[in-house]
Image 1: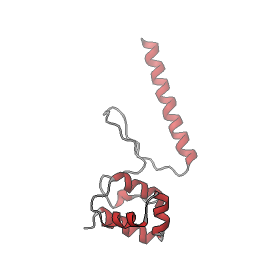
Image 2: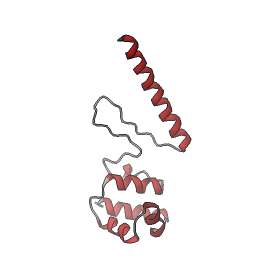
Image 3: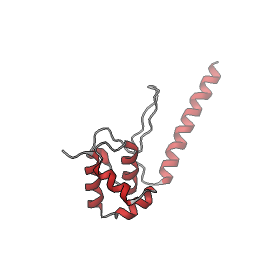
Image 4: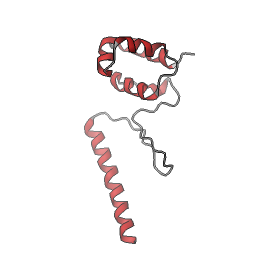
Length: 112
């Protein structure tokens, strides 16, 4: 079974994305990228960042990876697992979330 670094290496090579370009997009050195390939426990933040750059969903190969999720320690909040196709869609989604939350807040104020 491949570890996280090997999975990232495989996906990068299959994508045809150059190591140099990936390193530049990550604001890291090429050596750092090769180091990640060898590392068995790459942090989820790094995996998600590489996934965004490569437009690859690593949740297929790695358990515990969810792209574009919001994490909150408060159990009452809902984790959002959507993948947005454009910045406009993401803005609209968060705008709707804001309005929903604002409406709930206003309801609470009226009750009190």
